[in-house]
Image (cartoon, rainbow, N blue to C red; front, top):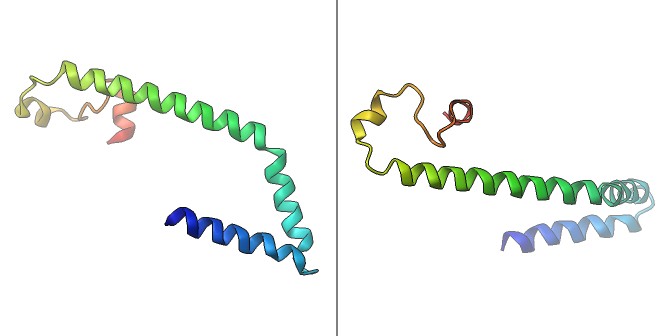
Amino acid sequence: MSINVFLSWLNCFYWMRFFSETTRFVRLIFNAIYGIRYFACVQILFMFAFGFAVYFINADFINQNEAASADDKQDDVIYPHIGYPLIDSLLN
């Protein structure tokens, strides 16, 4: 449903190019998006790669610490989400 709403708004935006006042702006936006297509693909690829790496690090950390008691977790200042203090401090 949300994809359909997004595509409907995109279609409405596309139809705005038929008005003389908005033609320049619509073409400008489409040309800008067309110009960054390779950068966007590389950025999405890196985001997925980082996401998968963090997911697998977190899954491994959870498997190693299944036997930890609840008291040990409450005593920590930074709750260990992933296991690396820098990333854990950003997540808290």
